[in-house]
Length: 354
Image 1: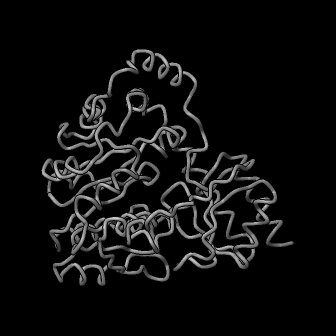
Image 2: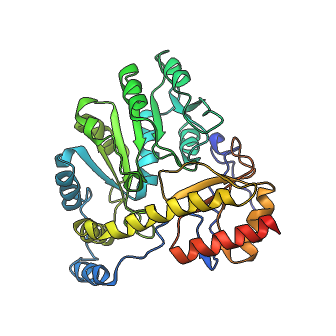
């Protein structure tokens, strides 16, 4: 076979993001909402899709959906950008604010895609590791940005995979300390009931990332959005792909966002079940759950990789971080339905106790 020349140099040591998505009876690994969209909302979605002209390109900026999101947040259209999932908007962040000669401040352990995007865009990664309890090393972060050479920072709140909120006072101190873009990734904010939205108009360098994938049960549709100042959103528009949000996804997003209040009982149920898991898991010898403000719980357990395998053998899929840097010996379980959570607790107890 005739060979092909090597790919771009920045790809040589890059490990593709692997969500380790394996079909299983109970799938509590990917932080999805365990409940599908209600059938009545699905019927409304079908009616909306019937009005879509498949032969025409979609509205390139999803303006109807932008208007709905803007109105709900007390903003105008120019302060909102819709993307093909949060993933596209994260990559656009690296494109717009990273690049050769520029620096991204990372707070590991956190979502690994941030570093992948930096590597793809030849952005230098500056790591300020979290403390042993996974809290942010606040003074170290503030000291590092004070050097004036950081171009963008991503603060995940709640943090994935560790689960805790970033303290609001720390984010405000960070915004005051730097002119770097500070993205607060609020993909799970509906489960924490906390947002930096009130400060958006006060800081030009603040941008918020949100998604339809989690609270709104649309992981299979791929819709995310940014809230930011118009000057920042304009920079994102320069690097985003044209027509990245297809017409069908826009139709689904409009219906779901209009009906977002109907998702509240499901969100409340997840918060209630999260509390039950956090109460029951420490009763199992050797199991240590970390505090969570999200729809998942990171926990440590002896022989974590073996525990993951034993759970999988019982038809329960959770996420294995046992060999990940700074997360050694840990696993992450997404909050499922009450029945799924009971089955997980029973299996975990049986595996650990033997």
